[in-house]
Amino acid sequence: MINYASREINCKIVYYGPGLGGKTTNLEHIYGKVKPETRGKLISLATETERTLFFDFLPVDLGTIRGFKTRFHLYTVPGQVYYNASRKLILKNVDGIVFVGDSQAERMEANLESMQNLYDNMSEYGYDLTKMPFVIQYNKRDLANAAPIPDLQAALNPGWEVEDTTKFRVAPDPYHAGENLVEQLPGGEWVERAPYFEAIAVRGDGVFDTLKAVSKLVLKALA
Amino acid sequence: MTAGNKNWSFTPDDFSAITDSLKRFLGETNSLCALLVDRSGQLVTTVGDASGLDTTAFATLTAADYSANDQLAKLVGEKDFASLLHQGEKSIYVADVARRWILVIVFDSRTTVGLVRLRMKAELDELTLLVDRIFSRGRNGAEPKPLLAGADDEIDKLFNT
Image 1 (cartoon, each protein chain N blue to C red):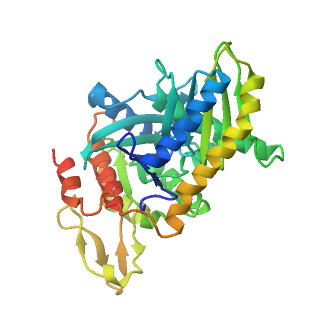
Image 2: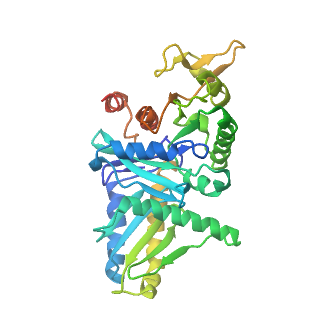
Image 3: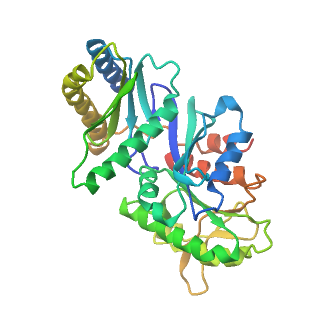
């Protein structure tokens, strides 16, 4: 939403993913690190045990473009399966998505379920996840039981078929040397993947890389 | 606009028409302030005395409150609850504007719920006309050039620091 009166560009970014995956931790780290004058309050609608009940919300200003302040509204959703009604509400009018996956091998099923749920909820609003700013964060990379990145990529980010023939050209992944975001598979099919980031959100590793990447994609979608 | 869905923008003319209308409403009902919020929780504008109010957080929570009540309405077989009232020493009256925006009126004992409610119908009609004007702009092909067209370099610079 562009507000010419207050000269602000407001964008909504939603952190999605399975329960206890680190979505709230991402926001808490951002809250702790950005200058107080460039962020608002961190609002948490959580249960007594600090599980997100409805959402967490943090507004941050990332700078000025063409005289307009770029203000990003960051939301998390409750990860637990049974909170789907509130999760879906948060997705309304979203501009960009971060999927926070839990790297632990035993959480693979929960990751897959949450990713499927994200696709389903988005399509119910008529949004196409493959055509909007979308990045994936593999969190908890420091844990001994973290699955290898290729396994996570194969399961959660295998790529979607590119239909637009003008996009039939290799697009290198700017964040990982030697990897591509758009490429042709041996079978001849062209696929595109979402950019991904490794993170240890409790230490802040990868948190800002993820935020910057999704914010940039959102602004570029306006350009 | 191209990002996300149902995005929109509005001009200084829209802005002054909206604020004039809300100022009139506040004057006639003796309410404290009015906030106009879009359905995704972003603040469109604030009119009146909102000092001491974290309007960004207020807007987000209003949209969440309204959306949750929308779903509650459906669960009891209602199409929607067109308005909500939270009463205290300071009260808030929340109403739907053309299924696009949410109008929040904050008031205290200097006025009454009855007066706010009475004037609300005419105010909502007025705002609905303005909303229709803003949202029909994209459909009739008169949408202005995207603000960030050609701003790729500037966007890159923003994130290289």
